[in-house]
Image (cartoon, rainbow, N blue to C red; front, side, top):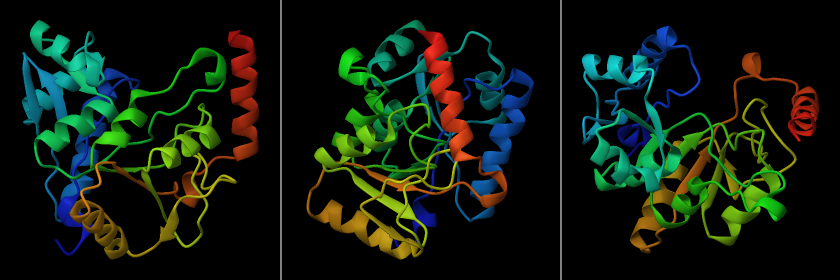
Length: 238
């Protein structure tokens, strides 16, 4: 295992795009993985079975089924028993990937501690899975609508590795390249990441790892405007 690329698998979460865009988006993601010399293994639930890697036919079903469900770890048994078409959350994907011997997957952003969690106790199951499952999650950070500082504090408390992929140790903000928060450390050398994963495995550490990759400059949003929009939307939602 000399490069992270050799371990690079991913799940595609198909919850918010229009159904006609789903399949083409999923194929673009799979092609991106193949272009780096790896084999994609899209994870989904179909007809009472767990699928790790999908044929074009099954990928189309997941992409275009209008009554597909979002499956977290607690929902896996129910979805399988009912034969539902399910796309997996970070928590469920980590669990299933670990069962299949996959040690790395990529997603957009992880769930976390919700704003106002001190009153609602709304904390994503993704964080609980990161505490207990040794899988590396490549992502653009914590979803920006969440409380990023509290999420990172939670991860630190529970010994979850949090690596920033970049020259500057500034944790990315999903839509933005950076926040005022820091990761455990930063690196631009994937061998550092692999060595960290391997040492954690040898030590028998059970927590997962986040490899936070900042969004490219040309796609990055204005952090101030995004935060203002989120705050306004949350106020209106109340």
